[in-house]
Length: 307
Length: 262
Image (cartoon, rainbow over all chains, first blue to last red; front, side, top):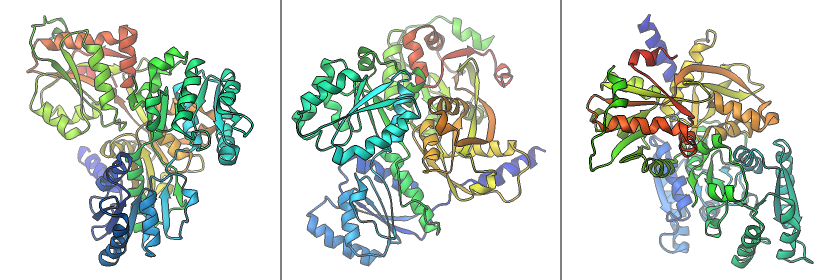
């Protein structure tokens, strides 16, 4: 009986080994700049996940950009890869311009919608969807009710509307304050902050127009005991209470999974996926100082603690 | 009894730190530096104890097979694999919500009716690929007889269970392997989103992490084990235990008692 169970188990295991990219697959990985941590993390995770494929890597930042551009075209001609993985906007732009008909996967670039996407291109967006961030806010802070957002209506009205719809599902409310021409940043913050329990920073070049503007936002929030939630570790020096960003190793693994699907002839239904992994960085001392109750069950979801 | 006597043994002072080695294939979150910092900070007040998490199974196994002096905190899955190679003495098993075990669910969109619809799909999991394969196999063996033609799947490793569930909700994966506790939390966070998902298969019960020693441990093992046990009695300790997904410990006196807990 035990032998039968063992054999059955082995049969099941065979069925759940992930489809590898076949040994003959040649993949060209074009990295905008290997020295940038997030690009490196995605690249390493991708490389780990496609062990059976022949993988060539090009770092566009090594040497002159123009030289690398022609190097890339030459490399594609010589190597005849079956698939190209482009990490970062520069890499994607160069690969796109190479006029190659090779299947392309891109990742780690912000606002992919501004870029042309050809028929044989798939990708992973650079930003987490608002609904994921909203879920994580609720997971971490079970008693929170109102979060403020300062935004430019031309840039982020849709995003705020999407976030608000998601927030309704978890009993959260976003209070938006438009940064209008007649009002300066400090006036807008003075109107918004008293109404909310925290301030959520969106990627908004009109709001986050300068280092001084960012400092003003954090200073005003601090003065009124309001925690700031941000979307990138870039803001860590300013003192946010929470950072939720894309987990880059997961992006690399997602790209590898996409590559496996494409090479197996299964064209993904969705052209551009959202990132599947999040990275949570929390300052629990600040959360406590600002009166935010942190869900103890959510602590196993925190990647790093800020002092 | 040999194992309980470890808790009552007197500590001899030794200059070097006594390590608690930790690895979990059930977690991919890569928060090792956080765990080490928080546990070291806590344990520094309890004695010359340090917490050493590992990022990979192979290195952790090497430490155990070499019977390096220290305590080992490991998943029950790994305990089952290693106990045949090393003489391991279980001391305590973790507890969460009053239980010493947990199990995993295969969660899919509501419209999926059978495992056969998952051919060539991506399943999201916060566990290692090997562990994910094991629990999925166990879950499928637990369901009513399957057809001979079982589907192949791809695993996408994500940092945490809530990421895996969101990946299914938002279309980045066609299924998720998550703990029952995480699925329950997800339903509490967003009942509306959770209503579009369902449990397709349930895995077997697994014991929560097991604290073990080898027969070569020194007298500091007892005070170290006690220090860990006492974490459940104070707020600072409970916060750290939560980072491991636990809220307490249960002592075990023997391997037989451990096996009898399921």
